[in-house]
Length: 457
Ligand code: IFM
Image 1 (cartoon, protein in one colour):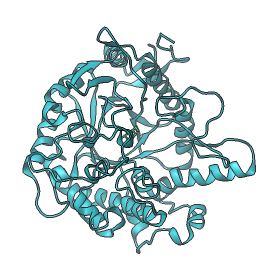
Image 2: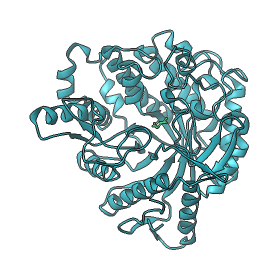
Image 3: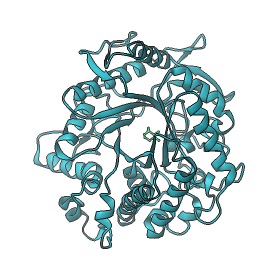
Image 4: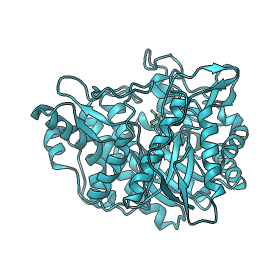
């Protein structure tokens, strides 16, 4: 396929729809030991033998800490409305408690001010996985004390930047931190214990709710929310075993987070399944988790297929895959959003991450990543479809601005719409970036209309 797919239908996007690109601190910044930054759990995890596929680490990554102005210019050149980035907690509070690091805070303030000067809305995430290692030494997210350290961190960052950022996300993908970090051990901190994982998930949710309340109490003007990684979970076959497994996987991935956030408590079927491994709650925790928020961020990459004969990524239906081995299934985004809209009393939704890793070939200094552009175009189409059906979606952000450190896959998987040559740190816009920029230009060209026809590429 060498042409970008024309979406099957046209949908309207309001003129104030927020189009963006996204990154996270550990994946791009580098400068792991500079200007007073403390170690994070990912700095430590990268040193565990065989934890990272290519044995790499985040010491340099995309060197964004030093090249942020060049990256800001690239973001601006795309014509996006918003840039979603995360603050590295150990860069601004190296030990996770006690002293703040002025140089770290100043770095993010420069970035925020630079974005505003370019007319780009900053969407700040507080926790995109890089917990200070000093807090992990005290039990990390499994220790209830970390909840309170997080609230302090949230309040301090908001005091410094909350007047200038459009949105503050508490956590990015708590399921990943809890389950991949504490149950399977594939991600930092590399723990393999389901009971600890579920307690960590509870503390992540609790810290979200308490942080939202504390930020509101201190008069923070930014919109406040959380970002979840969500997917429809479908049974591989119609057998009772696969259907029951799909129900359980849906419970652990979707309902375990959505239900308490939207005042339904933890799902009974998952609690029953967990038995002794269910988290310990204190009085008032569920009320605090359900603190009303301004938006829900949804990260969507693929659906999950539950098979009792294999793992939950067993595929069916002959769909093509990305380089991560994930099915390309934009319909799953529509299915997911319609289901969320049906089952919960939702605040506005942002699609805070969507994108794909593919093996990119460089030809004459160009990267013809038509598959990635198609992936993005088809998912934008899915967003338009559900908006036309009444779901309130306020924005869409491509993951990712740059190729970057893809966690346990190291630098082998490339999600960027901008290519990074890690040897030279040269950035090159891929065709997907050109496509996204041109698409947005067409959006802007329609300014003045209340509704803009989108989806045509
Ligand atoms: O790179 C990650 C990101 O940090 C969180 N969401 C999924 C992306 C792709 O795996």
